[in-house]
Length: 391
Image 1 (cartoon, one colour):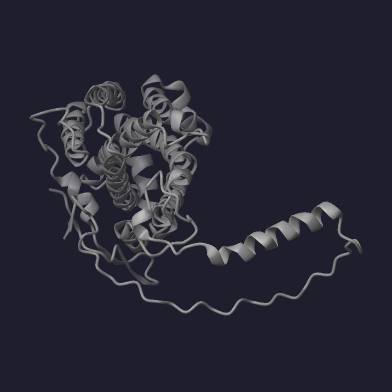
Image 2 (tube, rainbow, N blue to C red):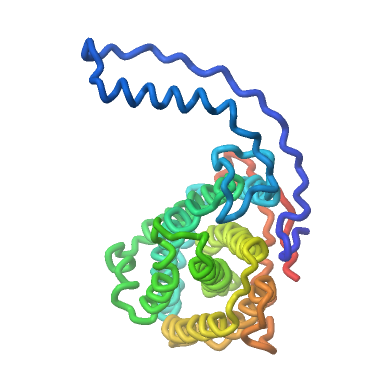
């Protein structure tokens, strides 16, 4: 069992030294070039060569000199590790490799057209409408706002995998939309025209906009504080609560034997998001430790209150007419319970004391192990690692 406190604690595989293959020698492409190089190119080339000649005097990398955001070590040199746990996240993430094409959507097409009620279709469509935009936002945030600011390559490498996974998730939602035959323009534009969906996206954009700047000076304490606050929102709320809890309406349909293909794909996504949230929270805690920072209690309280408010509106919209086995009230109680869990990992006060885990089956969705023959052509085992233990 993998533990939520450290989802990859049980992952102890040693990385073997792999010999690098000989570089491939491609045939030269014949092109016409000037007989004499321009003088400025000659000077630049000489400068580069001179700089390379001086590299022999550089001292070796000491991993203790690495820092998450203020390190001065060479970001191109992977090892020795300062954060071996980050490398383990990367290795473990690759165990959950999959694509949406591996999962049949045939039953979902029949369910949507013949079995879902009007209310259930409303839930299904709007959950997809929210998720499609959210994962693009997540991909851009990690790729543009976070990854480039990491000063240790073992951190960047997992986040590069995370960027890929967010793109994969977006492909998955698109695959569901195409398979069902939904109007793509209408679904994708809901985040712009449905206030309850737009409010969540707008809050996320506002919370991370300030760290999208490439010119942030992370040696400045105020900028450091702003960065960890924004990253805490992204890992703790956006991915840790909104994504994690956001799949639940579809899982509620799955529990009744409906839309099982979509739900199975969301299970794979959920495993990814669990690691994303856990990694982000661990990075926030590491930055706070290295830079002697403390998450501002007042700012955190405001963050949780705002996140709860927009989630209430969202839940009341997608579940304005209760569906069998799931309600807006249950959605919100589970949101508050998960929020408390994330807050504990961030070492801050629980925002919603007394919230109960009224949907214990939700955690089971991330504990799946699949050994099945999807199309009677091959046997595939997904997630070769252990299951997750949450508390």
